Length: 174
Image 1 (cartoon, rainbow, N blue to C red):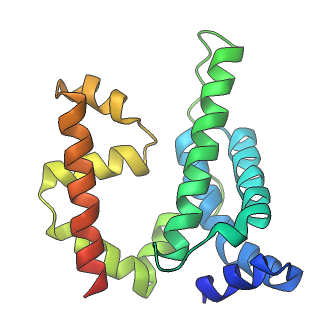
Image 2: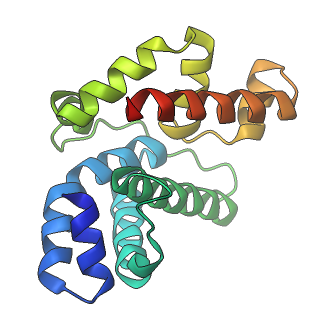
Image 3: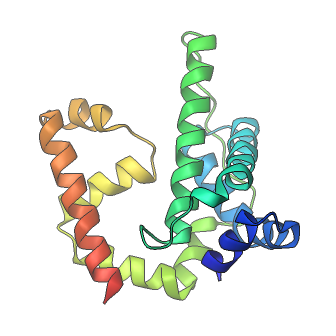
């Protein structure tokens, strides 16, 4: 369904874009909220991501990956960019911890078939490799941040994450 919507967006179909937004905005906003920890920044990241999706839908290639993963990566990068830019603008600023009032995006993901498959495949990874993926893709840590946090060489972190993603992909394709 998401793939079809993205392909229609690539042709300029506004109805498909609206359907895509309705289907994915709360999940993607939840991810942005988890990374930015600020409702205004999360809203900005989500908005910027959907603008990018509209402008670059023609670049989506279903042969290279799932539509949901493509959308998630765009939101993740927008949220990280906004957070970094905000820190540069206000040295020493720490956004206050705030609970997300929107429906729990993770709970909705886990309740879907795709979410259940992802949960199952994550469970098949070694716990330390699963933690690396969570830190990188859910908590918004960079590879360098993880390397410093764990005391593991940067190249090793990158290799472990790449191999873990390859394992997830193989598992999800079965």
